[in-house]
Amino acid sequence: MRFGLFFEMSVPRPFGPGVEPAVFLNALEQARLADELGFDWVWAVEHHFLEEYSHCSAPEVVLAAIAAQTRRIRVGHGAVVCVPEMNHPVRVAERAATLDILSQGRLELGTARSSTWTELGGFGANPDDTKKTWDEFVRVLPRLWGDEPVRYEGRCFSLPERNVLPKPVQKPHPPLWVTVTSPGTELDAAERGLGCLGVAAAGYAEQERRTREYHRRIQLCDPVGAVVNDRVTTLNFLYCHENRGVATERGMRMLGLFGLANSHLLWTREAYPTRAYQSLGNLAPAAASDAGNPGAARDAPEGICIGDPQQITRAIERWQSIGVDGINFLVNAMETLPQTEVLESLRLFAQEVMPKFQGVI
Amino acid sequence: MLVGTADLDALAAKAPRLPAFCTDTVSLARVEVFQAGFEMLAASREPLLPSGLHPTNPATLIVLAWRCAESPWGPFSLVQLRIGCRSGLRTRGFVWAAACDSPAVARELAARWGVPARLAHISVSRRYDGCSLAVRIGDATTLAIEAQDPDPLAPDDVQFTGTLTLAHTPHGLRLVQLEPRTQLERAERLRPRLERFDAAVWGHEALTPYYPVSASIGVGSIEIPPVRFVCRPDVLAFQGTESVGAAG
Image (cartoon, rainbow over all chains, first blue to last red; front, side, top):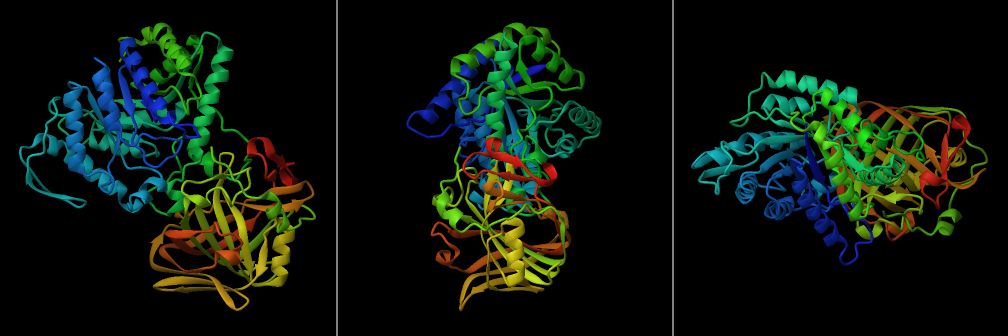
């Protein structure tokens, strides 16, 4: 079982001087500590225009800073939005290879297609096309890294013969992942030999079903790259404290605020009717859209890692038992938790929980 | 998080009066449902919503039109101007203004559900190459939308968010949550273009639809069940939600 941090860079209002920088600098400090404590990954998302929820629009810059300040932890570009209006495939390949060099071969590359109208509309992207462009990106990226030179004629872009530089140091290329929000995307991942970077809060039973199906399908995959990445990770929240009551009070406040910000995003399907986006959102797809009681809070997702070390250990054991290879944690949201508490939570988790899972991969 | 900053007294002054919460389910049949969404300027995010609601980013104005052939009160057309918002965690459209072409139906809509419908001439015209919506109040066309290039969709690809109206209810001034169930038999997506929009007539200069997002048209039926929840307009839904009628 592997563990990672997952940075959204959520920023609380009001956006006064110093507020955004504090979020980024706190994240860097968390990444440095995670590196020392033995965490395996640190991921940074790519989002645009999502006020409060995520100010992480240039993750490659964040990850370059993290790579420079750490020695061992792997840096997850998670995930690059594979929509040409946002990122040209050649630029993705160039930036990723540069990050792989600067991190000395520690890059993991996630791929995604964006879920909100705020982002897609902002770049003038057609939501109907994002599945297609994502598919084209993931097939062409390994070629852009590996072929010298490469020539490509495709649907969303074409490239006359050029040598895309630099080349990644990991050979044949960095591991590729896809973020999994909607049910069914895990099958897209499996069929292409891509790792399953879970970003939705699925319960145990649903995750077990998805993981089982993913592992079954990936046996028959037609890999887009030169290597198959067959790992499955899930997204979780982490707040670890010796006192269960304190952990619950502080951790659930963080989770609640993040969930509230998440539910306020303008999802693509809400603004633009399309077959290409079948679910609303990524944390609790049904809850945001249903009729129901608007005064009701959302139930905490199953298996959440908020509690004392024993509670968290039990939750992780359960995730492990259903075939999950790694868990990425959101450790703060909108700076709800003071930085000292976040760092203490990470230390306690590393001291009391992580050793129980060391060597279990 | 952003919350609305609308002048509640001004909103209250134009809010309909609900003598009682509607306890029966109303069925509408053979309804043409046209919906068009527009982004509004960032300055529009907060001034159009009461402080109990959160705006979306970007601010959105959704024009929803029903041309109903069969209802308990006979045929009618209704146009709602809805501000995209969130009530607690829930996706909602706050009915800023509405227009109806039948005085009797307008009275029913106001008294049953707090829909602030004013009388207007409404035309919904559907063609093979597009459709158009026009609302005329008095001699002036105050809203006109042209939508082109219909593209067939599965009926359940079109999403209709829940509705909030503001009304003087037996509980006081409240946001009334309506939960219409729209069942389309067929649906198409179109590219909308705003031909005419008179913000002053519709009641606020912050109504600034400037960027067309999408439109859809479908045919089907609508059921409006009894009201279950109302919310205080001045506090967030987590604190200000009250159960009534079927949920009470």
